[in-house]
Length: 430
Ligand SMILES: [Zn+2]
Image 1: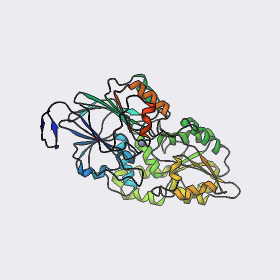
Image 2: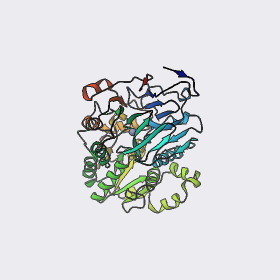
Image 3: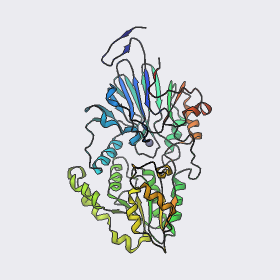
Image 4: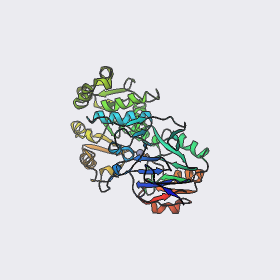
C-alpha cells in the first residue's frame, strides 16, 4: 500500500474509508462518529454525554471539514459550539430553528457556525461524501437517519428512531422499501434492556392523559419536553376530547410557531383550545430580542391566560410544563382535590442523578405527596428491540455496529453481522 501525507494528516492512494466512533459505542448519549475518506473528513453528530461520568469528546483535536447533525437533541449536537468558528454544519432547517430558540430562551448567543440545511430524501454532497437524509419518527422534530456514500462504500446511520410515534409510517417505509447494499449500519440500541409495554404508543399516552383530566377537580400538569411535538399533540387531543384548555408557556408557544414552517397541522397558540401562560422571565427574553421574535409577543398576548384565571377554575386546564414547574404546582396543591401531575418523560430523570434537570428532586418528591396525584404516562422516543430487528432484517447490512446503547455486548444475540467498534478505535472500511 502506498501512503502520502495530505492536509488531513493521512491519505492512502486508492479507496479507503476510515470510521471512528469517538463516543457512543457503549453509552446512550454523547454520540460522535468520524468518517474520513481520502480527502474529506466528516463528523456525524457531536453529542454531549448524558451521563455526568462520561467525558465529552475534545473536538478541538479532530480535524474535520463539516458536521452532520441527525436531530436537535443535546446528546447529538450539544458539543458543536466547540467546533472552530465557521465550520460548516448540515442540519434540518426546523432542527436549527429549535436549537436557536433554546439558545435565545437560555439567554445565550446563537451558534457562530456556518449552517446549511438539507431536504428529506434529497441527496447532497459534502466533499467526497454523498448524503441522503431519511426523515424518521423520533421524540425530536426534524430527525433524520442518513445514507452516507463515499469511496464506493455505503453506510447507513439510524440516528435515534422509532416506529410507534405519530410519524411511525416513516419507519414502516424504511422497512418496506429498504436501502440496499449497505456495507455498514450504525444502529441505535437505546431500548435493548428497556421496554415500552405500559405505553406502546402515543395513543396509549393520550388515553391516559384523557382519563386523568376528564374527571379532574383541580388543575392537571403534564411534565414533558417542549420539543416533544408528539406529546404536545397528545396533550392537545386529550384536552379536546375532555373539553379542557391546554396551557403552554411562551417557549412552547415559540417552538410550535417554528413548526409552522413545515406544517399547519400541529397545534399552535392561536388554536381555540390553547392558552399561553406568560411568566415574567420568558417575557423578558421576548423583550430582549425584538428582532428575533418579530410581532410574536404582540400576537401572543391575545391568547394569554393569567394566574387568576387558572385559580378561578383550575379544573378547566391542563398545563404543559417541565420539571421547573414545581413552584406553580405547589401553588395548586389542595387537601380536598389533589393536583394531578402527569409525568410524561423518562422516569430515570427522577433517580437523583440528574441535577441538570432543575426541579427533578422536587418532582420526585411529588410521588409521595398526598396533595399530589402523581401519574406516569410516557412512551419512548426509541424503537424497542422487535422494531430494531425488523429494520436490521430489511436493511441486510454486511456489518452492523452498535451505537447509542449501554448493551452493545448483547447485539450479537439479537442481530446478524455485528461488529462492535469501541470508542476511539479506527476502523478501516476498505
Ligand atoms: Zn434523540
